[in-house]
Image (cartoon, rainbow, N blue to C red):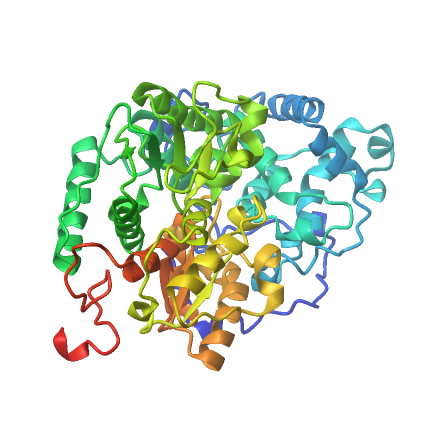
Length: 538
């Protein structure tokens, strides 16, 4: 792992207006430490029945490509041009207006023109012209065309794994070109040769064979939950049980596995448990479909479909009526943007209906899953929850719209409605950095690798810059979010750029504020921090 420069050194040479000395086609990527992810280990790919290149690393001068690699890639491009109308359209309609150019957090943090969405898409568009277009073959570079070479393949790996698929550029594109879709297809295409990253593929293997990203065995999940229940008992005086693998429960609750074991996700999980106990919800957690996140989505469509279907097979086995999903980002994008295309409605479950308020979630009639923020906001709107928001007075909160839940499915108001009910101190970041214009955490789409830390800090800089503004102006010390990847990567980003700002799930703050029947007087929050006015009691 490379040495990370200090914050005041990282962006010292950044110049977004500098014109490169060479044509972009003549500038090859440099695989410098901190700016690329390591290649996947061959055993991981073999276990999943996928092709691979054996032992290699991206910085190798000569990649161990198979003899027919070019034919396989060109066949893959042709296949995807025929299967995905959006891909063909995106390759045809861009007029290079540049509206997207300065909207990408990686361009803003790196100054590399190939991180402009318009040019990132040109990395493949130029090959389509060069290999499939008569005029492209005839006029070459003059027509924006070039041939497919090994250097191009390296370039694809470098830049399509510097895109977090956040879709911010698509908000500003007058033609609606979604560069994230281009990235998804390009990673899928690289998988034709087995070119993938280790950090993003090992979680796929664990999820495929065990059920969650880090390979938590059923007994480990149970023990972790029992440990968290012990903390809840100490903080609230309540002895709560969490039903596990319970057949016939009304609801299957699926959340990212990070909520079972990782700080700060565990506090979000404690908030869920308190909420479900508060309303007497009939639910269960599965130790076999124990992952809401879908790292297959970061790699190849086939892998994403497999991991997605596994949750529904578990819902069928447990005979639940519908699924309630926890605070996760890309899980929601897969569920709401790809589910029906892949599988259509699952008719063996009911249309989700809140057993507490009677609200029928019509929008979830096909995929049978409701987001926890939709569920909780509905409970609050119907007056079903009792809160003491002063228990969160030791925090001044802002909200980070996670890319996939905001731009991917339009969840903007529910988390804000919840936060304003459970916290007395809520502050918005600048308008052009929130809701559908939100900036990415900088490490999404499987880029949360330690070896990639410099680019993570560069890519996360625009988000951190907005947090720094409200930190200095309003004293914001907590940023809430509804994405497990955000909860995993934003603490590192804040520690680097805005020390003193902590990351929390929305339901952690719900759990702090809930007035539970039979509880003892609370003196601390779920992290054992003293509540305001209780400092001497702790």
